[in-house]
Image (cartoon, rainbow, N blue to C red):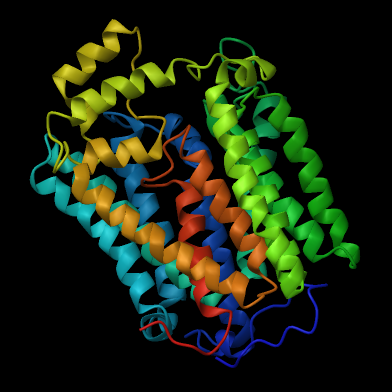
Length: 432
Protein backbone atom coordinates (compact mmCIF):
# COMPACT_ATOMS: atom_id res chain seq x y z
CA UNK A 1 0.00 0.00 0.00
CA UNK A 2 1.35 3.41 -0.93
CA UNK A 3 2.32 5.86 1.78
CA UNK A 4 -0.41 8.16 2.99
CA UNK A 5 0.02 11.85 2.16
CA UNK A 6 -1.44 14.13 4.78
CA UNK A 7 -1.54 17.73 3.57
CA UNK A 8 -3.86 18.67 6.43
CA UNK A 9 -5.99 17.10 9.14
CA UNK A 10 -9.12 18.90 8.02
CA UNK A 11 -10.85 15.78 6.71
CA UNK A 12 -10.68 12.04 7.06
CA UNK A 13 -10.06 10.31 3.74
CA UNK A 14 -10.96 6.72 2.85
CA UNK A 15 -8.23 4.18 2.29
CA UNK A 16 -6.79 3.80 -1.20
CA UNK A 17 -8.90 2.10 -3.85
CA UNK A 18 -6.51 -0.85 -3.92
CA UNK A 19 -8.09 -2.11 -0.71
CA UNK A 20 -11.39 -2.62 -2.52
CA UNK A 21 -9.58 -4.29 -5.38
CA UNK A 22 -8.23 -6.90 -3.00
CA UNK A 23 -11.73 -8.02 -2.09
CA UNK A 24 -12.64 -11.31 -3.80
CA UNK A 25 -16.00 -9.86 -4.84
CA UNK A 26 -14.26 -6.95 -6.53
CA UNK A 27 -14.06 -3.18 -6.08
CA UNK A 28 -16.77 -1.10 -4.46
CA UNK A 29 -19.33 -3.93 -4.55
CA UNK A 30 -17.03 -6.20 -2.57
CA UNK A 31 -16.27 -3.50 -0.01
CA UNK A 32 -19.99 -2.73 0.26
CA UNK A 33 -20.83 -6.37 0.91
CA UNK A 34 -18.05 -6.57 3.51
CA UNK A 35 -19.39 -3.42 5.18
CA UNK A 36 -22.95 -4.76 5.26
CA UNK A 37 -21.77 -8.10 6.67
CA UNK A 38 -19.75 -6.27 9.32
CA UNK A 39 -22.78 -4.19 10.32
CA UNK A 40 -24.94 -7.30 10.71
CA UNK A 41 -22.21 -9.05 12.73
CA UNK A 42 -21.95 -6.08 15.09
CA UNK A 43 -25.73 -6.03 15.59
CA UNK A 44 -25.49 -9.71 16.56
CA UNK A 45 -22.59 -8.90 18.89
CA UNK A 46 -24.68 -6.43 20.90
CA UNK A 47 -26.62 -9.51 22.07
CA UNK A 48 -29.78 -7.48 22.75
CA UNK A 49 -31.76 -8.00 19.53
CA UNK A 50 -30.54 -11.59 19.20
CA UNK A 51 -31.50 -12.43 22.77
CA UNK A 52 -34.86 -10.70 22.36
CA UNK A 53 -35.73 -12.70 19.26
CA UNK A 54 -34.64 -15.93 20.93
CA UNK A 55 -36.89 -15.44 23.94
CA UNK A 56 -39.91 -15.40 21.62
CA UNK A 57 -38.74 -18.39 19.60
CA UNK A 58 -39.93 -21.89 20.56
CA UNK A 59 -37.55 -24.52 21.86
CA UNK A 60 -35.86 -25.46 25.09
CA UNK A 61 -32.63 -23.78 26.12
CA UNK A 62 -30.36 -23.90 29.15
CA UNK A 63 -29.63 -20.18 29.10
CA UNK A 64 -29.11 -17.53 26.46
CA UNK A 65 -25.32 -17.58 26.71
CA UNK A 66 -25.21 -21.33 26.03
CA UNK A 67 -28.11 -21.46 23.62
CA UNK A 68 -27.25 -23.40 20.44
CA UNK A 69 -29.45 -21.20 18.26
CA UNK A 70 -27.71 -18.02 19.42
CA UNK A 71 -24.31 -19.58 18.95
CA UNK A 72 -25.21 -20.75 15.46
CA UNK A 73 -26.32 -17.24 14.43
CA UNK A 74 -23.08 -15.83 15.88
CA UNK A 75 -20.94 -18.23 13.85
CA UNK A 76 -22.98 -17.47 10.73
CA UNK A 77 -22.67 -13.68 11.16
CA UNK A 78 -18.92 -13.76 11.77
CA UNK A 79 -18.41 -16.39 9.10
CA UNK A 80 -20.00 -14.16 6.48
CA UNK A 81 -17.56 -11.39 7.37
CA UNK A 82 -14.64 -13.82 7.17
CA UNK A 83 -15.75 -14.94 3.70
CA UNK A 84 -16.27 -11.36 2.50
CA UNK A 85 -12.81 -10.30 3.69
CA UNK A 86 -10.75 -13.45 3.13
CA UNK A 87 -8.66 -11.86 0.37
CA UNK A 88 -7.26 -9.35 2.88
CA UNK A 89 -5.44 -11.99 4.90
CA UNK A 90 -2.24 -12.16 2.81
CA UNK A 91 -1.82 -8.43 3.39
CA UNK A 92 -2.59 -8.79 7.09
CA UNK A 93 0.06 -11.47 7.46
CA UNK A 94 2.56 -9.41 5.48
CA UNK A 95 2.07 -6.04 7.18
CA UNK A 96 0.62 -6.88 10.61
CA UNK A 97 2.09 -10.27 11.40
CA UNK A 98 2.98 -9.65 15.03
CA UNK A 99 -0.34 -7.96 15.71
CA UNK A 100 -2.11 -10.95 14.16
CA UNK A 101 -0.18 -13.36 16.34
CA UNK A 102 -1.06 -11.19 19.34
CA UNK A 103 -4.80 -11.23 18.69
CA UNK A 104 -5.08 -14.85 17.66
CA UNK A 105 -2.56 -15.98 20.29
CA UNK A 106 -4.69 -14.45 23.05
CA UNK A 107 -7.91 -16.11 21.93
CA UNK A 108 -6.14 -19.42 21.31
CA UNK A 109 -4.97 -19.36 24.93
CA UNK A 110 -8.60 -18.90 25.94
CA UNK A 111 -9.60 -21.84 23.73
CA UNK A 112 -6.91 -23.98 25.36
CA UNK A 113 -8.33 -23.29 28.81
CA UNK A 114 -11.15 -25.67 27.90
CA UNK A 115 -8.61 -28.49 28.38
CA UNK A 116 -8.55 -27.88 32.14
CA UNK A 117 -11.81 -25.99 32.57
CA UNK A 118 -14.28 -27.00 35.26
CA UNK A 119 -16.89 -26.65 32.51
CA UNK A 120 -15.00 -27.60 29.34
CA UNK A 121 -17.85 -27.17 26.87
CA UNK A 122 -18.72 -23.68 28.15
CA UNK A 123 -15.08 -22.57 27.83
CA UNK A 124 -14.66 -24.12 24.40
CA UNK A 125 -17.82 -22.72 22.84
CA UNK A 126 -17.41 -19.22 24.24
CA UNK A 127 -13.73 -18.93 23.33
CA UNK A 128 -14.30 -20.36 19.85
CA UNK A 129 -17.03 -17.82 19.10
CA UNK A 130 -14.65 -15.09 20.28
CA UNK A 131 -11.91 -16.49 18.05
CA UNK A 132 -14.25 -16.40 15.04
CA UNK A 133 -15.28 -12.85 15.84
CA UNK A 134 -11.67 -11.73 16.13
CA UNK A 135 -10.83 -13.25 12.75
CA UNK A 136 -13.86 -11.52 11.23
CA UNK A 137 -12.95 -8.10 12.61
CA UNK A 138 -9.31 -8.41 11.56
CA UNK A 139 -10.54 -9.02 8.02
CA UNK A 140 -12.96 -6.11 8.29
CA UNK A 141 -10.20 -3.85 9.57
CA UNK A 142 -8.03 -4.67 6.57
CA UNK A 143 -10.82 -4.46 3.98
CA UNK A 144 -12.81 -1.42 5.08
CA UNK A 145 -11.41 2.06 5.41
CA UNK A 146 -11.43 3.48 8.96
CA UNK A 147 -14.37 5.71 7.99
CA UNK A 148 -16.26 2.80 6.41
CA UNK A 149 -15.78 0.65 9.50
CA UNK A 150 -16.77 3.57 11.71
CA UNK A 151 -19.95 3.92 9.67
CA UNK A 152 -20.68 0.20 10.07
CA UNK A 153 -20.36 0.44 13.85
CA UNK A 154 -22.56 3.55 13.88
CA UNK A 155 -25.23 1.87 11.73
CA UNK A 156 -25.25 -1.24 13.92
CA UNK A 157 -25.68 0.73 17.13
CA UNK A 158 -28.35 3.01 15.68
CA UNK A 159 -30.28 -0.04 14.53
CA UNK A 160 -30.41 -1.38 18.08
CA UNK A 161 -31.52 2.02 19.41
CA UNK A 162 -34.32 2.30 16.85
CA UNK A 163 -35.33 -1.25 17.74
CA UNK A 164 -35.40 -0.19 21.39
CA UNK A 165 -37.74 2.72 20.60
CA UNK A 166 -40.00 0.33 18.75
CA UNK A 167 -40.00 -2.08 21.70
CA UNK A 168 -40.91 0.64 24.17
CA UNK A 169 -43.51 2.20 21.84
CA UNK A 170 -45.25 -1.16 21.60
CA UNK A 171 -44.82 -1.83 25.33
CA UNK A 172 -42.86 -5.03 24.87
CA UNK A 173 -42.34 -7.08 28.05
CA UNK A 174 -39.17 -6.19 29.96
CA UNK A 175 -38.51 -3.05 27.91
CA UNK A 176 -38.33 -1.36 31.33
CA UNK A 177 -36.61 -2.86 34.35
CA UNK A 178 -38.21 -3.19 37.78
CA UNK A 179 -37.04 0.33 38.70
CA UNK A 180 -38.53 1.92 35.61
CA UNK A 181 -35.26 2.40 33.69
CA UNK A 182 -35.23 1.80 29.97
CA UNK A 183 -33.86 -1.54 28.79
CA UNK A 184 -35.49 -1.78 25.35
CA UNK A 185 -34.50 -4.93 23.49
CA UNK A 186 -31.55 -5.58 25.81
CA UNK A 187 -33.34 -6.74 29.01
CA UNK A 188 -30.57 -4.88 30.89
CA UNK A 189 -30.09 -1.13 31.22
CA UNK A 190 -26.31 -1.40 31.30
CA UNK A 191 -26.24 -3.28 27.99
CA UNK A 192 -28.46 -0.60 26.48
CA UNK A 193 -26.27 2.07 28.08
CA UNK A 194 -23.23 0.54 26.42
CA UNK A 195 -24.98 0.58 23.04
CA UNK A 196 -25.90 4.25 23.46
CA UNK A 197 -22.32 5.03 24.46
CA UNK A 198 -20.85 3.45 21.33
CA UNK A 199 -23.59 5.07 19.24
CA UNK A 200 -22.73 8.45 20.74
CA UNK A 201 -18.98 8.05 20.31
CA UNK A 202 -19.28 6.99 16.68
CA UNK A 203 -21.75 9.81 16.04
CA UNK A 204 -19.23 12.34 17.35
CA UNK A 205 -16.52 10.87 15.13
CA UNK A 206 -18.75 10.99 12.05
CA UNK A 207 -19.88 14.53 12.82
CA UNK A 208 -16.22 15.56 12.75
CA UNK A 209 -15.58 13.51 9.62
CA UNK A 210 -18.55 14.90 7.69
CA UNK A 211 -18.64 18.36 9.25
CA UNK A 212 -18.30 20.05 5.84
CA UNK A 213 -20.93 17.86 4.22
CA UNK A 214 -24.71 17.88 4.32
CA UNK A 215 -24.42 14.31 5.55
CA UNK A 216 -23.49 15.69 8.97
CA UNK A 217 -27.18 15.90 9.90
CA UNK A 218 -27.33 12.08 9.92
CA UNK A 219 -24.77 11.44 12.70
CA UNK A 220 -26.05 14.57 14.49
CA UNK A 221 -29.49 12.97 14.67
CA UNK A 222 -27.85 9.74 15.81
CA UNK A 223 -26.06 11.58 18.62
CA UNK A 224 -29.31 13.15 19.78
CA UNK A 225 -31.01 9.75 19.78
CA UNK A 226 -28.13 8.21 21.76
CA UNK A 227 -28.27 10.98 24.38
CA UNK A 228 -32.04 10.79 24.78
CA UNK A 229 -32.04 7.01 25.19
CA UNK A 230 -28.88 6.95 27.29
CA UNK A 231 -30.27 9.26 29.93
CA UNK A 232 -33.26 6.95 30.32
CA UNK A 233 -30.98 4.04 31.26
CA UNK A 234 -29.26 5.74 34.22
CA UNK A 235 -26.10 3.79 33.30
CA UNK A 236 -22.94 5.70 34.28
CA UNK A 237 -20.02 3.40 33.40
CA UNK A 238 -20.36 3.82 29.61
CA UNK A 239 -20.79 7.59 30.06
CA UNK A 240 -17.50 7.88 31.93
CA UNK A 241 -15.81 5.75 29.28
CA UNK A 242 -17.09 7.99 26.48
CA UNK A 243 -15.92 11.12 28.30
CA UNK A 244 -12.40 9.78 28.70
CA UNK A 245 -12.29 8.49 25.13
CA UNK A 246 -13.33 11.89 23.76
CA UNK A 247 -10.54 13.51 25.76
CA UNK A 248 -8.04 10.94 24.46
CA UNK A 249 -9.21 11.51 20.89
CA UNK A 250 -8.95 15.28 21.33
CA UNK A 251 -5.40 14.89 22.63
CA UNK A 252 -4.47 12.79 19.59
CA UNK A 253 -6.02 15.42 17.30
CA UNK A 254 -3.98 18.16 18.97
CA UNK A 255 -0.83 16.08 18.78
CA UNK A 256 -0.96 15.31 15.07
CA UNK A 257 -1.57 18.99 14.27
CA UNK A 258 1.06 20.34 16.65
CA UNK A 259 4.57 21.49 15.84
CA UNK A 260 7.55 19.83 17.50
CA UNK A 261 7.67 22.57 20.13
CA UNK A 262 3.96 22.27 20.84
CA UNK A 263 4.29 18.50 21.14
CA UNK A 264 6.93 18.93 23.83
CA UNK A 265 4.42 20.96 25.82
CA UNK A 266 1.62 18.50 25.20
CA UNK A 267 3.67 15.65 26.69
CA UNK A 268 2.65 16.83 30.15
CA UNK A 269 -1.07 16.35 29.50
CA UNK A 270 -1.08 12.53 29.85
CA UNK A 271 0.80 12.84 33.15
CA UNK A 272 -1.77 15.35 34.34
CA UNK A 273 -4.60 13.06 33.30
CA UNK A 274 -3.00 10.16 35.17
CA UNK A 275 -2.67 12.34 38.27
CA UNK A 276 -6.35 13.31 37.98
CA UNK A 277 -7.32 9.63 37.66
CA UNK A 278 -5.28 8.80 40.77
CA UNK A 279 -6.97 11.62 42.64
CA UNK A 280 -10.38 10.39 41.54
CA UNK A 281 -9.51 6.94 42.87
CA UNK A 282 -8.22 8.24 46.22
CA UNK A 283 -11.32 10.40 46.67
CA UNK A 284 -13.72 8.03 44.99
CA UNK A 285 -16.35 8.45 47.71
CA UNK A 286 -16.77 12.09 46.71
CA UNK A 287 -16.47 11.47 42.99
CA UNK A 288 -19.03 8.68 42.89
CA UNK A 289 -21.45 10.78 44.94
CA UNK A 290 -21.49 13.30 42.09
CA UNK A 291 -23.11 10.64 39.95
CA UNK A 292 -25.41 9.41 42.69
CA UNK A 293 -23.45 6.17 43.00
CA UNK A 294 -21.70 4.32 45.81
CA UNK A 295 -17.93 3.78 45.78
CA UNK A 296 -18.61 0.04 45.56
CA UNK A 297 -19.99 0.55 42.01
CA UNK A 298 -23.35 -0.98 42.87
CA UNK A 299 -21.71 -3.80 44.81
CA UNK A 300 -19.22 -4.70 42.09
CA UNK A 301 -16.08 -4.17 44.17
CA UNK A 302 -17.17 -6.67 46.79
CA UNK A 303 -17.78 -9.27 44.10
CA UNK A 304 -14.35 -8.50 42.64
CA UNK A 305 -12.74 -9.49 45.94
CA UNK A 306 -14.60 -12.80 45.76
CA UNK A 307 -13.35 -13.32 42.21
CA UNK A 308 -9.74 -12.66 43.19
CA UNK A 309 -10.12 -15.02 46.12
CA UNK A 310 -11.43 -17.73 43.77
CA UNK A 311 -8.57 -17.10 41.32
CA UNK A 312 -6.03 -17.58 44.13
CA UNK A 313 -7.05 -21.25 44.24
CA UNK A 314 -6.03 -21.75 40.57
CA UNK A 315 -3.69 -18.86 39.85
CA UNK A 316 -1.75 -20.21 36.87
CA UNK A 317 -4.44 -21.72 34.66
CA UNK A 318 -7.70 -20.33 36.04
CA UNK A 319 -11.04 -22.15 35.98
CA UNK A 320 -11.48 -22.07 32.20
CA UNK A 321 -12.77 -19.16 30.15
CA UNK A 322 -16.23 -18.09 31.40
CA UNK A 323 -16.39 -21.24 33.55
CA UNK A 324 -15.46 -19.90 37.01
CA UNK A 325 -19.13 -19.13 37.62
CA UNK A 326 -19.78 -22.84 38.04
CA UNK A 327 -17.29 -23.12 40.91
CA UNK A 328 -19.20 -23.99 44.12
CA UNK A 329 -16.96 -21.82 46.29
CA UNK A 330 -17.52 -18.73 44.16
CA UNK A 331 -21.25 -19.36 43.96
CA UNK A 332 -21.43 -19.64 47.77
CA UNK A 333 -19.57 -16.34 48.12
CA UNK A 334 -21.97 -14.66 45.69
CA UNK A 335 -25.01 -16.04 47.48
CA UNK A 336 -23.64 -14.68 50.75
CA UNK A 337 -23.68 -11.23 49.16
CA UNK A 338 -27.16 -11.78 47.75
CA UNK A 339 -25.85 -11.71 44.17
CA UNK A 340 -26.57 -14.12 41.32
CA UNK A 341 -23.96 -13.07 38.79
CA UNK A 342 -22.61 -15.01 35.84
CA UNK A 343 -19.91 -12.58 34.77
CA UNK A 344 -17.35 -10.42 36.57
CA UNK A 345 -18.51 -6.99 35.38
CA UNK A 346 -14.81 -6.42 34.72
CA UNK A 347 -13.17 -7.71 31.57
CA UNK A 348 -9.71 -7.99 33.06
CA UNK A 349 -10.87 -9.99 36.08
CA UNK A 350 -12.88 -12.21 33.73
CA UNK A 351 -9.66 -13.06 31.93
CA UNK A 352 -7.78 -13.53 35.19
CA UNK A 353 -10.24 -15.91 36.83
CA UNK A 354 -10.97 -17.77 33.60
CA UNK A 355 -7.52 -18.06 32.07
CA UNK A 356 -5.23 -17.43 35.02
CA UNK A 357 -1.83 -15.85 34.65
CA UNK A 358 -1.35 -17.56 31.28
CA UNK A 359 -4.20 -15.57 29.74
CA UNK A 360 -3.19 -12.38 31.53
CA UNK A 361 0.32 -12.58 30.06
CA UNK A 362 -1.18 -13.11 26.58
CA UNK A 363 -3.49 -10.13 27.14
CA UNK A 364 -0.63 -7.88 28.28
CA UNK A 365 1.45 -8.82 25.24
CA UNK A 366 -1.51 -8.07 23.00
CA UNK A 367 -1.98 -4.74 24.74
CA UNK A 368 1.64 -3.81 24.04
CA UNK A 369 1.19 -4.63 20.35
CA UNK A 370 -2.03 -2.62 20.10
CA UNK A 371 -0.42 0.36 21.83
CA UNK A 372 2.56 0.10 19.48
CA UNK A 373 0.23 0.27 16.48
CA UNK A 374 -1.61 3.26 17.91
CA UNK A 375 1.66 4.99 18.74
CA UNK A 376 2.80 4.57 15.15
CA UNK A 377 -0.47 6.02 13.88
CA UNK A 378 -0.08 9.08 16.11
CA UNK A 379 3.64 9.56 15.48
CA UNK A 380 3.05 9.31 11.71
CA UNK A 381 0.34 11.98 12.12
CA UNK A 382 -2.27 9.70 10.60
CA UNK A 383 -5.50 11.58 9.97
CA UNK A 384 -7.33 8.57 11.43
CA UNK A 385 -5.41 8.64 14.73
CA UNK A 386 -8.00 10.59 16.85
CA UNK A 387 -10.81 8.10 16.15
CA UNK A 388 -8.52 5.10 16.65
CA UNK A 389 -7.13 6.42 19.96
CA UNK A 390 -10.59 7.36 21.23
CA UNK A 391 -11.97 3.90 20.43
CA UNK A 392 -9.05 2.16 22.15
CA UNK A 393 -9.46 4.33 25.25
CA UNK A 394 -13.16 3.52 25.40
CA UNK A 395 -12.50 -0.23 25.29
CA UNK A 396 -9.77 0.01 27.93
CA UNK A 397 -11.92 1.99 30.37
CA UNK A 398 -15.28 0.30 29.85
CA UNK A 399 -13.70 -3.06 30.72
CA UNK A 400 -13.08 -1.75 34.22
CA UNK A 401 -16.80 -1.79 34.95
CA UNK A 402 -18.21 -4.36 32.54
CA UNK A 403 -17.09 -7.63 30.96
CA UNK A 404 -16.32 -6.71 27.37
CA UNK A 405 -13.65 -9.30 26.63
CA UNK A 406 -15.63 -12.28 25.46
CA UNK A 407 -17.88 -13.71 22.81
CA UNK A 408 -20.31 -11.24 21.25
CA UNK A 409 -18.84 -8.16 22.91
CA UNK A 410 -18.88 -5.15 20.57
CA UNK A 411 -16.11 -3.10 22.27
CA UNK A 412 -13.57 -5.92 21.96
CA UNK A 413 -14.43 -6.52 18.31
CA UNK A 414 -14.04 -2.79 17.63
CA UNK A 415 -10.62 -2.84 19.30
CA UNK A 416 -9.52 -5.67 17.01
CA UNK A 417 -10.52 -3.78 13.87
CA UNK A 418 -9.07 -0.39 14.88
CA UNK A 419 -5.74 -1.97 15.82
CA UNK A 420 -5.55 -3.36 12.28
CA UNK A 421 -6.45 0.08 10.92
CA UNK A 422 -3.66 1.64 12.96
CA UNK A 423 -1.19 -0.86 11.59
CA UNK A 424 -2.18 -0.79 7.92
CA UNK A 425 -3.21 2.78 7.12
CA UNK A 426 -0.13 4.80 8.06
CA UNK A 427 2.48 3.92 5.46
CA UNK A 428 4.38 1.25 3.57
CA UNK A 429 6.48 -0.14 6.40
CA UNK A 430 5.81 -3.80 7.19
CA UNK A 431 5.41 -5.20 10.69
CA UNK A 432 7.61 -8.29 10.62
